[in-house]
Length: 149
Image (tube, rainbow, N blue to C red; front, side):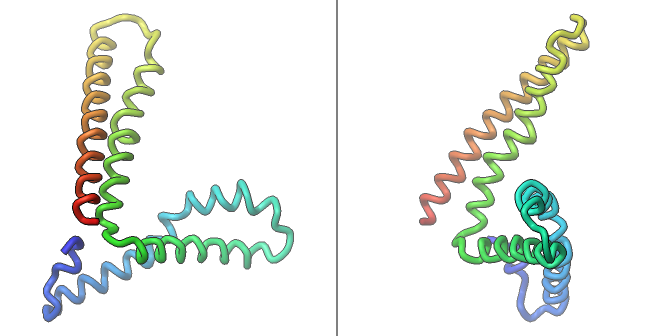
């Protein structure tokens, strides 16, 4: 199966305990992972408009965001393929290409030296690897989605 926890044997007590611990860890950490999304929604859009029952509305928004993500995960068939596509798009750009590009632009006018030349070569190599990962990862994810659907 697509999930490691679903592939565990049902009769094994250790497997059941690991599933319970996984659920508890997700239950505890999921709202924490949504902190930045909540912070943007609350501080930029809702907080200036809310004048009464601030705490109640804040908790309602937090709960709604968590419920929305859980429902979103439940209704999408083959969520693993969707996560793979998002990972292929985001990891290569946000993790590889953007930092190297920003580093190049930031140090573009620094004094010429062997160190800067080597840093530039390293950044260009990482950018090329990021672009290749973007193309190949996205292509593979889209092919997998087409084959499954």
